[in-house]
Image 1: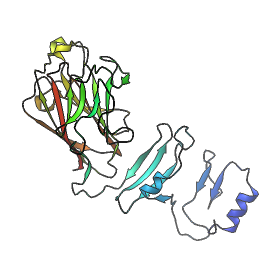
Image 2: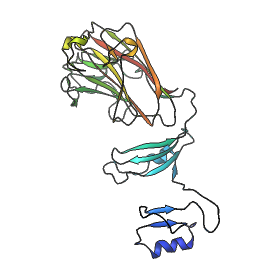
Image 3: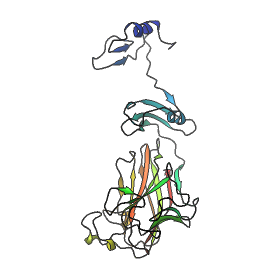
Image 4: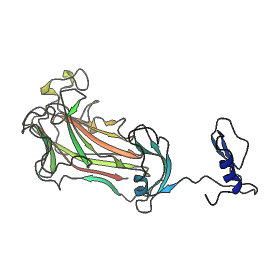
Amino acid sequence: MRNLPVSLLLFFIVHPAWSQVGINTTSFSDAVVLFMEAQKIPTSNYGGFLMPVVTEAQQASIPVSTTTQADDGLMVYVSDPITGKQCWEIYDGVLHTWRSVYCTNLECSSEILFEEDFSTYLDGTGVTGASSANGNYPSGVSKWSLTSFQSFGSSTQALPGMLVDANDYALVIGGELNFRDTNGAFLFQTQAIDISGYADVLVSLDIHESGPLEYIPASHVNDFDCGETVSDYVDIEYSTDGGITYTEVANYLGNGTTNHTLASDLSGTISLSFSGISGTSFILRVRLQNWADDEIYFLDNIVVRCN
């Protein structure tokens, strides 16, 4: 406040009830509440508007509301010398998340933004039909989550959902995440990964299978309305808008269908990769199902990096 002209201080003191404020001008539209003229008075020099500048840690400490829309539209400029993030961001008070309006593209040296090879977990970590938290399963705020569903085709999530017993599971075994006899739709999902400032992000992961996995397109009425013995598939999907919408990687290298990334028996390990992704945040999810004790999908080596 000490740098404000005395006349401006008097303006705010004498005219507290005025509905509009102009700085360096008295002429502005009736539509505005606050207007700042770029040309300084009385000189002919020009200036700009400098919004609050914060690091990512400082931004995280801003006490924005996570229950109301009171802070919708709050703006800061994130300039972090440690992470390299340079973004003008606005707070979305509806979904309660920061969104980048514009980011200066960061130089890419193949930095890894997210990595999971399941090698740090105890064998048996995950969920089963007998328990929803086994081993050192990362519950709460974690790198990833596992979700089963109440019934086939249902949008209602639950754990263990359609998993029936200890033989139906999604568990880390031998440094891989194993999906056995899920009895319907099952979901693996990563945390939201910050990809701000990168013009291109590359995603890679490995999937292989064991058992007589089947998928017969003629038996399907639509994407998911199909019999138990002909509906084994894997869908790889991603979101760049905080999970509002998802894009599916369809029929990867001919190993799937127009509706599914992978379907039926797989020949060896499928190393999937896709790029050309940009935005502020990235969520990867793997949606799959199989229907027998001798049918297992294996997920491993998930890497998200700048490209």
